[in-house]
Image (cartoon, rainbow, N blue to C red; front, side, top):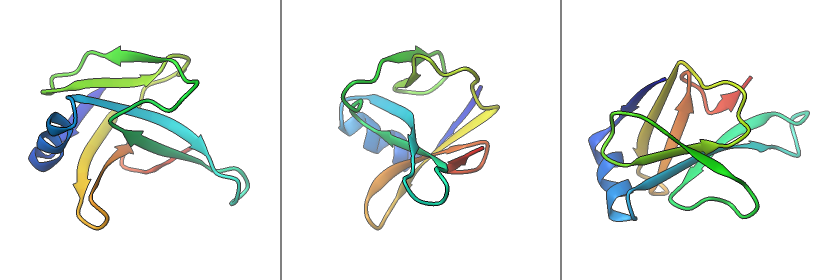
Amino acid sequence: MRVVVSQPAAEHIAARGGRHYVWLTRAGCCHGVTRLSSGSAPPAGKEFRRIPAEVDFELYVPEGLAQLPDEMVIELRRFPRRVESYWNGCVWVV
């Protein structure tokens, strides 16, 4: 998996402990569309595994994830200020 991280996102992650968790969230609307969520701490009740990536922080994905994307892009949003991850260019996982 290729990981592309913007410098502002890398700095933001480092300032919050140097770990970035990415997981899938099933939306209640839109016919149960799966969305990519991320944060500096894992959500309760989920197991994660560390992904070897050439980045300046630890990157984790769900333990039971069947397939990794070809590319993950991690960027810092300004309003509201948060890190977002994109799976093969999308926040929605197909």
